[in-house]
Amino acid sequence: MHPMHLLVAPLYPAGREPLPPGLKEEDREQFMQAKKYQQWMVMGMESCAAKTVMAGVGGLGIGAFFSLMSASFAYEDPYLRQQTQAGMSNTQKAREIFKEMGKGMWRTGKGFGKVGALFAGIECVIEGYRAKNDMINPVAAGFVAGGILARHSGPKAVFGGGLAFAAFSGAIDLFLRRESSDDD
Image 1 (cartoon, rainbow, N blue to C red):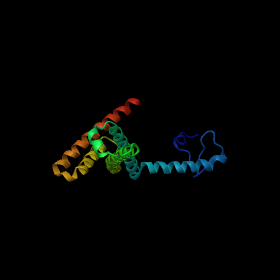
Image 2 (cartoon, one colour):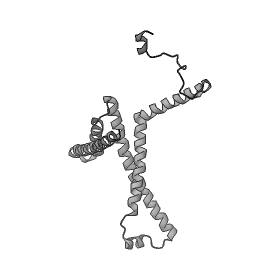
Image 3 (cartoon, rainbow, N blue to C red):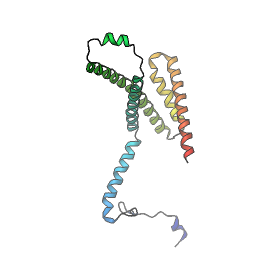
Image 4 (cartoon, helix red, strand yellow):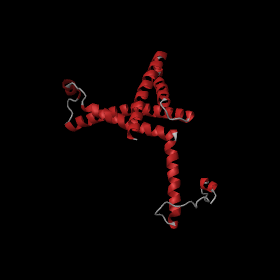
C-alpha cells in the first residue's frame, strides 16, 4: 500500500457507514433514526432560545425554593396575626398562610427567572457573535444584564448595576472554570 493512502480517511456512501460494535445490519435503520434525533436534540440545546428558557425555568424554581425557605423563617407579629385572622377557623388560617407563601414564591421565582433568562440569553448571543467561550462573555453579559435591570434608576445606577453584575458574573465564572480544570 502506498504511504499516502494511510492519510486518506475512508469514504462511505451516506447511510452505509460502519455500525458501532454489537449492532447488526438490521439495526441500522433504528440506529440512524436515533442518531438523527440526537443531532436534533444537540442543535436544540445549543440554541439561544433553549438556553434562555432553561435558565428562566431554573431561576423560577430556585427563586420559589428560596422564597419557601425564607417564609419558614419569616418574623411575624403574633398580635397582628391575631387581629387579622380573628374569627377564622384553623383551616381558613392555613389556607391564608399557604396563599401568602404561594404569592411570595411566585413573585421571587419570577424575579429569579427573569434575571436568569436575561443573563443566559445575552451571554449566548455574545458567545455566538464572538465564536469564543472565554471569560469575556459572562462579564460582558453581566454588564449588559445589570444595566438593563437598573434601567429605571438613572444612568449612574445603570453603570453601577452593570459593573456589579459584571463583577459577580466574572467571579462566578472564574470559580466554575477553576473547579472544572481541577477535575481533568
